[in-house]
Image: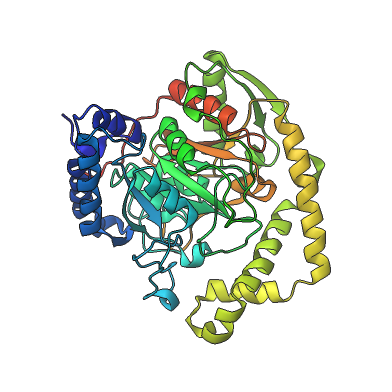
Length: 450
C-alpha cells in the first residue's frame, strides 16, 4: 500500500470504508509528513497531535462497530487559524490573540466534526486574513510566496501534509494560493457555507474556502459543509444537492473564455498557457465561446477594496482602539483608509455590488462556467507579498462560486491555475464542469519536496 499521506480524501475514504486503512494510520502518516517538512514550509500554527490521534482511535472503533458518519469519517483536515476551534488556540495570525482559546467551534468546524472528520491542527494565515504575509513558504519553491491569506492551508494540502483543509476568501484568499501551490480550491457561493465563528475581515465579502487535491475531494467537503446556519444571518436556506452525483460522467461543457481584463492583464506565459488550455479543452469536446464582462465590472476593483476597508474598520474598531500598535503596518493602513470613506460612498458601493451580482449571474446563465486564469502569473518570488488577487475579485465581490484547478507547471517549475466561475448556488454545475476539465488536463504532480 502507498504511504497513506499520499491518498486523496476520496481514495482514503474508500480504503477506510473497506477497513483497509485505519484512521489512526492515516493520521500518523500525516503527522510524520508534517515532521518531515514543517521546518521548511511553516504551514502550521498549531498541530493538535495528541487529540487528533485520540479522535482517530474513536473513529476506528466506530468503523469496527459498523458505524460510519460518511465519506469524511476518519479523514484528517487542516483548519485555517481564523476558525474558532473549541479548546484549541485560534490566533488569527495576530499577537493580540496569541492565547485565545475558544469554547465553541465555528459552524464549519462543527459540521466537519459531525461528519467524522479529524481536526489535525490550525494552518497559518496572514494577519486577520488580510495583507501582512504569514511565515509559510511555497512547497514548489521555498523562495516564492504560497499566496494568502489561506497560505498554510494551501501549502499543507499541496505538500500532502493533510488531504483537505479549510480556508477563506474575502478577495482572493482561496483561489490564488490554490493556484500558486498547485492544488484545487473552491470558493462556494456567498451564504452557501456558514461563516459563523470565524474572525471576520469584511462580513459582506467573507467566504469559507475549501482546499483539496481533486475536484471529487472538494465536492465531499462541500457536501458536509453546505446548508443553512441560524448563527450566520448571511447563510441562505437553499436545498443542498448531492454533489457527488454531479461528478458521474459529466458532459463536455460550454465554457465562456474571458479575454477582457483577464488575458489583457495576464503576463505572457500565463496568457499563452490559458490559450493552450482552451485549445486542449476544445479538442476534447468542450465548446469554447468568448464572452465579455458586464459594464458594471467597471470600478469593481476600487469598490471591492473600499468595501473591505470600511468593513474591516468596523470589525476591528474596539480592538484597534486598544491595541493599534500591535497591528501590522498593512492592517493599520487598511483600517485608517477605511475610516476616511464616507457612509454615502459605502452605500454607493453596496448598490454597485448588487448590480454587479445581478449582471454576473446573467452572464453565467449563458455558459456552464466562465474560464479565466486564476492569477496574472505564477507565484512571485519573495515572502513580502502574497501576490495579485485581482483575478479572484469578481467572484468574491459578486458572491458567485469559483473553483481553481491546477493546469500545468511553467519552465521554472511553478504551477499554473485556471479559474472557473458559475452562477450563484450552481456549485453542482461548477463541480461537474471542473471534474470534466480536470480529467482532460490530468494534472497529478506533487511538489518536489522529497
